[in-house]
Length: 313
Length: 228
Image (cartoon, rainbow over the protein chains, first blue to last red):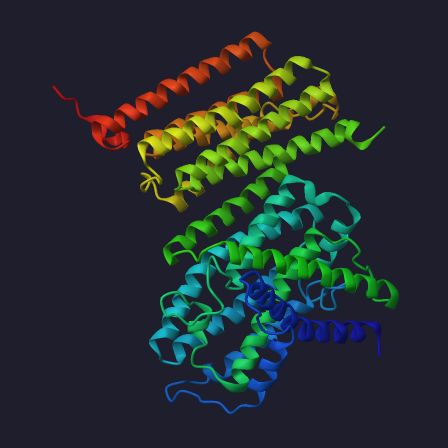
């Protein structure tokens, strides 16, 4: 097997196996902060395992979109994940596309999910879809601008090039443009992964739910696929933040020894970021839905400022 | 040479703090809660004092230390305390909806920053090397945007107290411009400005209290009618 193929398999395995762990870690952490005991770290794996063995119910009104969506979502999220440098600066699919491809693969998955929410024919699904799209319409420009700021410094939208460039410049994250872009991307991360100021992943309360409302009609293996892609998407976005802004110790190729240390550092950085997200979740109340655009407008302006400050300073 | 004696490092830190000041200014525009706005202002002033101290350190200019200390004492400590007390006295906790709604105000602030950048660009001297003498020159754009956003906030908010805070942040912009371009004005002038400011805020505080006592509200848009 060529090195390319090995890299591909390693990263694929990493995405599939690490993503539920990060989700589980967040849940446990959050429970501990709220002085609950919480589920074990492996609960997400058990949930997936259980869901994959169950039977499922498909609404009578559903068209082909309903069964196709879990697969589309899963595949697009994985593809996006393969274009992002995780343990090595050389992403296995970096030849296939850069950050624009990542953003729009994620958008494609979201598009199908929103369609599926409508397709199921329940009123909650449509409500969730419309909310998801409202948020995405503002979060996406912020994401794009922040990413452009980073890409502008490196002179390329290819994430492997960006990561290598960032690796070559220590203390780069202290530059104002980088900090602003990081702050903007952090807000986008919270919005896109449905975390508390924007959405609450732990509730099915009809007044507040967004992501949960869209997938309300899913059950069994389809639900497992959707949950799994949601955690992979979270991993992808967190990796983007971690590796583009704090790339210390990132291996530049796929040889074994640097890869091991790179992997250890990568997991530590991810857990730290997850910890910060959980901290934000625990210390904030959920925003009213009509206040969410304000938060996202802040993210948008932060990333616009980041882009401007590339030129000011 | 230690890294903290390197003007390059000083330049980086000043740039970073200036960027944070700008972010805080936009946070003020985005805030409803008056207490938070006061706190944000205090932090902003603290950062401003830090910038002044950094410039003083690299230029060996003791009178800027004095200006930094005055900023810290007056704007980061005394004024926030005075304003918080006033807040308790007039019993107003949050701003009503401003004239232009929040998301659009935030985006307008972003555009004002862009405009400030365009204006400040004509002052840039790219041939200058980064040394102690040119420290902080690149913060002019930030200073101008503080100024513009402060103005915008003054016209956009209804409460007299928020307008006072907007005025103060606008003054922060002027101070930043002065310190980054000229290494501070002579100490006498600085002290004059600070006392001016202190008195202005005390007078404004009394005025806000009187407005509240007379109209049962500090909404200045109610002051447009003359009464015989």
